[in-house]
Length: 241
Image (cartoon, rainbow, N blue to C red; front, side, top):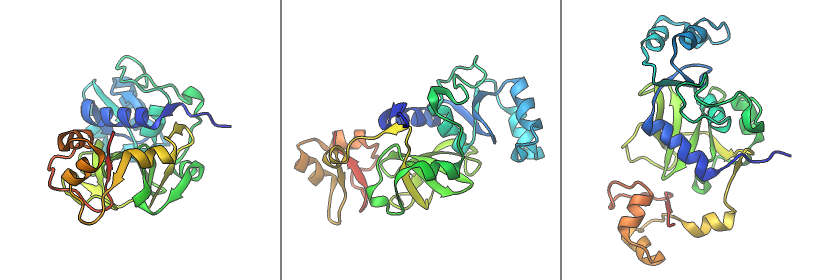
């Protein structure tokens, strides 16, 4: 039996923090290692990490400052589950390989281990695993947004839009193939999620939603990181509390 190592809210908070508060670089095989000289040499010479062998990628790796952390898409998820905490003095940023009882896994084995796997994004909840292809994955953080480590756009861990439900254009984004709940994460019961989130329907406004649940527009905007209170979209899940 697999025992979850953290809640979905903890998982999301750590992923968002990495994207927003740390210097990162997309490096194949990176699950949070700081950019030390020895680690740069290690990741560029490892024969099992061919992406890191191109001259352009090598140049980016060796130019990274010592307060930069290396991640790739699935290793971002593993690093968080393995205890990554941003420690620049630890070989893997505080993560421990297969730490917290979480085994090593691939994108394919991760999506196979998920429950409630679906291509319907109207029922997605924060903390779910996002599957794009056998070569890429991400983390859903709510509000139509994801955190993903990707060489696309900014070549780092970054916040992006889940274009299946969010086409605002504030962030770059992509359409994902499916999503599911990881066995290493505890998710709120379905009835709790239903009670604390409102799925936007045609004709909804943020002020109407706020009035319905007895909260303020400002509260909803801050909780859901909504920059324009006049811009919400059908299918968006608005967190109420």
